[in-house]
Image (cartoon, rainbow over all chains, first blue to last red; front, side):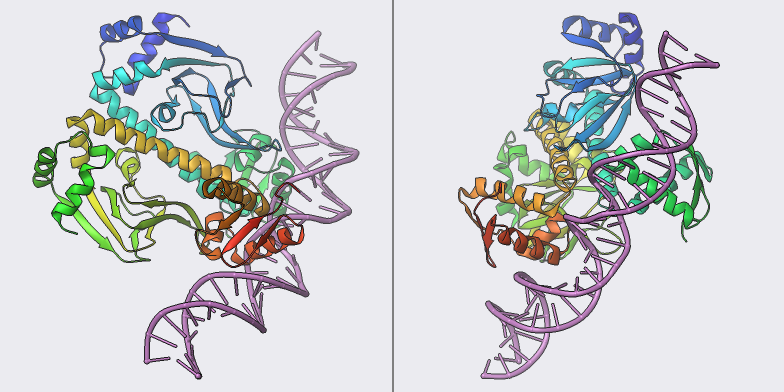
Length: 221
Length: 221
DNA sequence: AATAAAAAGTTACCACGGTCACACCTCAGG
DNA sequence: CCTGAGGTGTGACCGTGGTAACTTTTTATT
């Protein structure tokens, strides 16, 4: 990916929609920034690492994960092209990453330094309002996650997930968006526990499933 | 609390530090706002209620709580005088309260309408930057909470809580900041479970405790 | 096609914690 | 003083889900 490529991506990004191509070029010429590539499974930011840049994902997918000391993984959210990470840390009173940011595929990220963000905010109202929206939306993701994990039983988590996917995919036959292992991490549980509960649910007549799909039969039983 | 009282409070608030008393008066004359009083245990905002105002707490304490369908309570955070609620909802793409906001004591709140906030942001850079900090800090509170509750065992929660309080109170003898019932809600667990675990920890020689204090003996045992 | 490496399913074991039931204590208001 | 309400300690019961060990299936690599 060369300079021209990512300028094209940027100019179609909602945060930068108010800047002319010329203005964008000028800004990026005047400021220090880094475009970095990461390979799959590479750690982009470690938990507790100090945050100095706002990161814009140009391509690829990254996972934000909470790792506890025993090695358990809880995936908070997945972000992809166009999403912004770290903006909240730049403006908050504590600026170390509370979670690990991990490349889920080959990823290209634009690291924009703090001073540049502040200046962009000052230059342009659309950018600033957009950034506030971005930051605010992060709190929604987190409250959703709290809701999801404070729902005690694994069966509840699964039912909720199936309802959601069924709505999105508009079907009772749900193609799993990721491996069962990843799904377990998303629920913050053991893979074997997920397997076990799925089996129980099949036994109870709620669902049917194979390696890649789950078929809803009667979730209310 | 009369007009002059809360103008005094406002002018010493960090968000408004950049406004002269005269400017503040002018703004509040020009805009519609509401100062409301709530009694203890009154609901200030219901879960799913639509958010139209940013709320500034003038006095009292409020709890943000997540209530699930079975009536279990998880207290996310406690806010008090000077704290701001709802700012993130005003700017986010979904603006209904994800949690319940409850008065923990008699409370006075200044409800500032969305349009006023946007205008204040446009008028004054300090206000806008301060607001971004406020919103950003909310994400930290939420990630902390996720960390706290995804720490499986109740004993871990208690130990973490005691470490924290011990540092704050600079003592091995910790005065409980609230009733054990409230503490259980903060952990999102059953009161009896908290009681049971405290007893076990006493039996194991980690702590000693009575109705209002906990004494740390050896948390690493 | 052969082989290695992930992912997925299965099972027995048992600790943690929710539930319910009851006794006790403290404190405010009649 | 009594009474009732709310906070608190304790017990028995048992379901959920973590753990660990193993097998089977799928996927990737040569």
